[in-house]
Length: 368
Image (tube, rainbow, N blue to C red):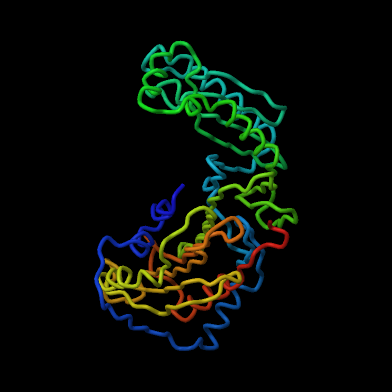
């Protein structure tokens, strides 16, 4: 799950982060909105009348009580993708029965790759792992470990790719890989990755998104993963839509390290802003979660509303872009109305909403 995957949800973010050309000497003109009026302040105060704490990765922050994270499948720990869903236990049991039957009935294009479902590991009444083919057309030695776990009322699905050429029917493929220079260790990763998946499942628990863990570990949607012996690579995204007005996105990644920060990409970003007749409301260095961060807040007209300078909204802040590691996770925050109507809030109100959320970020106590 790489950084550009966020742009699949918010297209302009990709363009802000990496426009395809470099032009020198672009000047940024800042269009600072007037201070909040009393009416605007009351509007924002009403939104924040009640707030709740949220935990994404190792970070803690506050959002209005009406905000709900809708992104349930954007967590990757090392090479394991995790999705979560709150379910009643009978629904989880039915899910497992139906899934196992589906996998048993699945066919492959090449008969040599049968059976589609290679093996079932029943770890407990609450946990099972299916060793299955990737799909019906790919070779049966490239497979997926698909784990299902039920804990604290939450059903998790964990997937991890493996390679297994141990079956004699793949002897010729194995010989070809070795001749091509592939190390034999890479040709059978099943046992190692199965053990890694089982270990991760043993440390995963369900939680409500406003429940804040007190142990070292990382928060995913509806879940918490206690730390083990190693320092995992973590890539986690939460998305909070607000009344079809905008979405606030919090993305934490402790493994992706950039060579430049957002402000050092000034020319690329400004050239894009100019191309859409955008305006900068604020830009500069800030402190978020106790870390140095870059911030760039813009609005722009839209195709449907070319005379409205605030029809499009894209506020972005990023911390630890160049220094990301286990204890300094890269933090990318975005407020956007991509593919939504113009914001119902004024520019001043949007700045205040942005500040109240982003300035509440901090590293969770006992996170490491």
